[in-house]
Image (tube, rainbow, N blue to C red; front, side, top):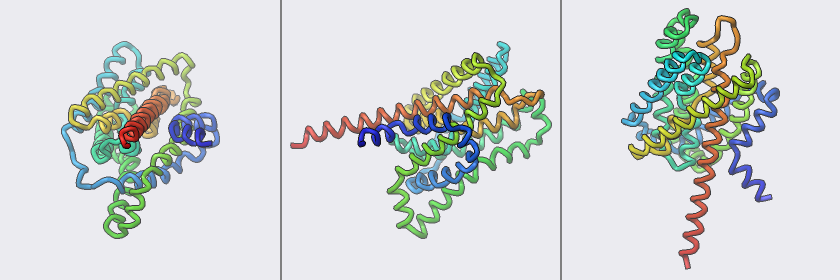
Length: 318
């Protein structure tokens, strides 16, 4: 029995993806309710973060440059080769803002949750600015959407979900300290809430792919493209973040994306004139799989290291 429990704990993210994929027809009906799970999840997380640590850092500027510059480089390079669907898919995999839940994984891996949370906000603001400014230049139908309407439509999907639990965590800290500390102590709950959210995210991914006109061959190509982009961003985030003493947070900040927002952006701003579902959604959907496989592997390695350290310490103690 303990073996089963440990297996579920160790691979909760992968199990959640499988459950959501297999039961997509059922779970997709309730996908819009995940905002409540995310709210509570972030409340647990923010109760562990000192607000004085939420500061803009040099590494954040570098990450913003990679996020936007990488998206533009991918789009124009692949478009020049005539691979328009791949161009849009890879571009959005780069441009997507960092997932709010990345702070949960960052802290579970032993990283700097405050640095990651700061970048979640910065990357979301950047996307809200870049999309309405840049997309009209590369996608003609987007020219009909006023800048401020596009800006606000993106921002209102991100900011309330970040600001709400953060402000509540601060309110609890200064009014109900015991409740605040209880949330901080039980922070492990946030990880399993995130795993629950992945069930619904996977269901949305399968539903979006089912409504796509892409054949299996094209889906495979787009999936491989998103794998390459996902791996590259985790690598760059860790490498560059490590240079600034922020390796774990760096990997999560660049690698873990708010894919649900990305799918919405694709449907809102990159819809073909024929009205078909943008093929970029396939690449974005498979990105969910790749980023959580990478995170599951990182969490597994950390558990093994922690276990090794415990065994080593026990051997040293007489």
